[in-house]
Length: 528
Ligand code: BES
Ligand code: ZN
Ligand code: ZN
Image (cartoon, rainbow, N blue to C red; front, side, top):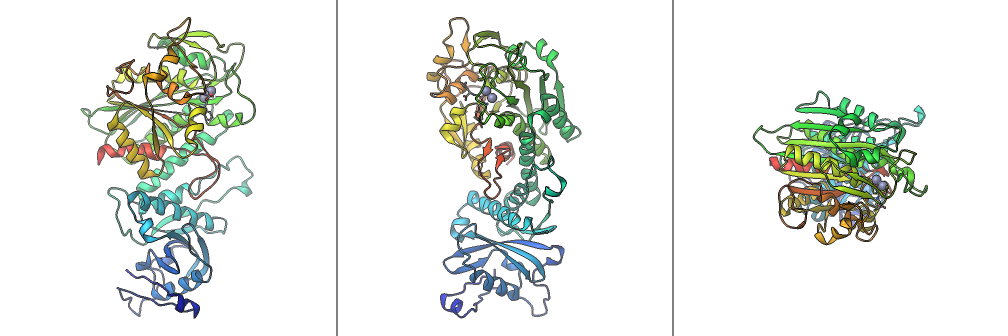
């Protein structure tokens, strides 16, 4: 590998010293190999003190490296994330070089290496984006999978409702150079699928609620998934839910003029004899709070209250594209939570599909009501080996973990390990939270019903919501929540990770589409 480490002295003289372990033939005309295919390149470079080493040096001629180093050294290119765009270098119009920081940090392990590749390609693409480039070669030497994820995620923009002139042009990205370390079973194509899947979830979540009603969500997802390998999709209507006795779900839906839907999606990538995994996603396409109306400040964010539904649908899209050999059954209850003359009122009692009565103390705690029936339906009908639900469930989880970690409540150490590993690999991580009968008591306090949907409200609100949900997972011991039981169940509270406050590399301000990639990685882990 070629490296160039200019010393302080040589830098002062504006010259560079090149050390090489591979000689490039003098007759080699190309300054970047294959550069003619691109009108721009994104390159990664390790920086340590005054030293700069291009990661894809093997595919860059010495002459071009010399120019790059001179330019970079003159612009105080140092810390991880620094980006410099250089023009007309080595026959390429625009070259964005991104610092990967210290090589020893960037390559400390697979988690750091993947994240380095993601971040650097995203920052490079963003630097080039508004400068009229069409075909960009992206340095994949650190990780092809990560570089593709970053390049796709960085380009997300929800501008289809804007004036045509102000819409961002999408750019074609292709791999440049060769991975130095290969990721097992992951490559440029898998990275593109991971990135595209998360962007799909972002799109579903960002679309305003008048354009993403339960009906429109089902149509969009059915259109997207119909015809994909190993996928069967059923769109159930209100009458079906009535027949199933999903009164808890219907109690939320009844306040809205928009009819509810219940999506049932089967992915059969594994053998018939393989276990089936359950997935459930909260699909409240708008949460006004119902009669327990939310304050108007920030209410618009509640168009994203179908983040669980969006990430489940998007992960299934990606899982099918990846042809992962697993079996999954997914349930997505979809409705609006609105106040009206027909809406459920605080104090009303409903009987859920599993026969338990629930006193609805607060109509804004609607997520657990729709999940109750979806969890019971999925766990009782399909007897899955594991079941995971995702929901933008509680402000309490957002307060506890902010937007860094998704809260994970699970009765299974084995499931937790898999999930934790998957979340770390994608840098879309989980933090384990308590699933404990101690939080159940407050949910069982009701003068008139088996359960109430509010508990103590804010204090420990994420954990008491999880305890409430446990009462609807068929097969689970309803009293001893923390002990290993069947099925393995995880509740993921994504209220905090739903939305990104600011753009930073491949994190784009707005609805995040998280943790779509972690879900895909979780199911991929069964096939490794
Ligand atoms: N959809 C909200 C939770 C939420 C809050 C998601 C902020 C994303 C960002 C949920 O339906 C809700 O309103 N929960 C209540 C529950 C409470 C009444 C027990 C909450 O968290 O305040
Ligand atoms: Zn609510
Ligand atoms: Zn909600």
